[in-house]
Length: 125
Ligand code: FES
Image (cartoon, rainbow, N blue to C red; front, side, top):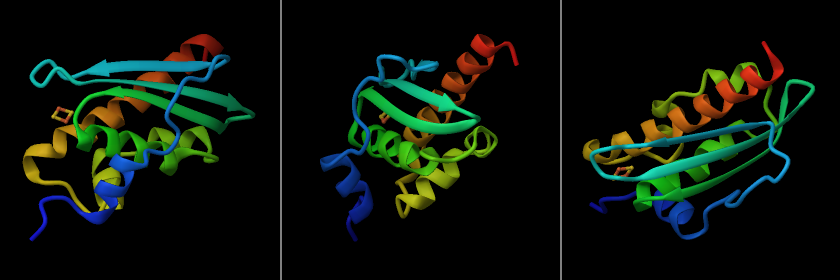
């Protein structure tokens, strides 16, 4: 059996929403001290909707695939839905990750939560 699903390989090879949003109003950066991977998320939120989301990930293939899938899952969604995104949902959408790679999906959840925190701080909510 292949170690990684086709979806993981697809999002690793062709990551969606890579880059920077210059006028982002929510930015979050997180890292995992053990593996040294770093993930940065940019959100552009208007009228409580995630209008745009981009990421930069310095990390492993699963971290890149997780960031890519996470951005796809929250793009166009209300902020309240993005707040509920879990790493399990990211991993499931990727048709699974090996157990020892689950922390890569946790990083994606944390990066989005951190960007949403930043947005809430900026807007004083
Ligand atoms: Fe740490 Fe993938 S090995 S995020």
